[in-house]
View 1: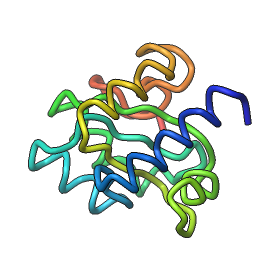
View 2 (view 1 turned 135 degrees about the vertical axis):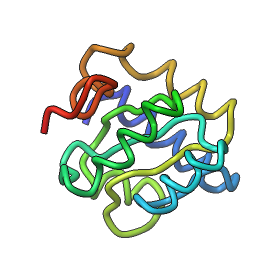
View 3 (view 1 turned 135 degrees about the horizontal axis):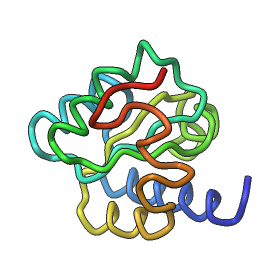
View 4 (view 1 turned 30 degrees about the horizontal axis):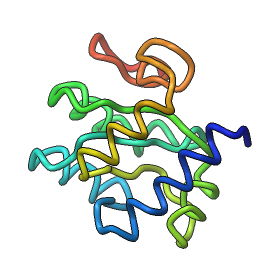
Length: 121
């Protein structure tokens, strides 16, 4: 895992301790649907079936969705079992994390999975 990924996962852990992270697919979908999510982070090894609705909902609600570390690393950053996705509900944390991630359309962006024009799974 690179320095940027390590920094991002460390920041995610801090956001979790601050109470601004929703863990898992269901909680992430709920946060996006309710307008509380400012960023959705998806594990690079998450299954397509699990994520299709979340990716489409995020695109529809214009919530940035980015692909990051494997599920076990995502879970470890939050002190839990492997996770497929998390939603960041703190605006400042989300903005900070987006600054550490590639821009849309590049590696790690929503274009890797499900974009506005449809899923590529």
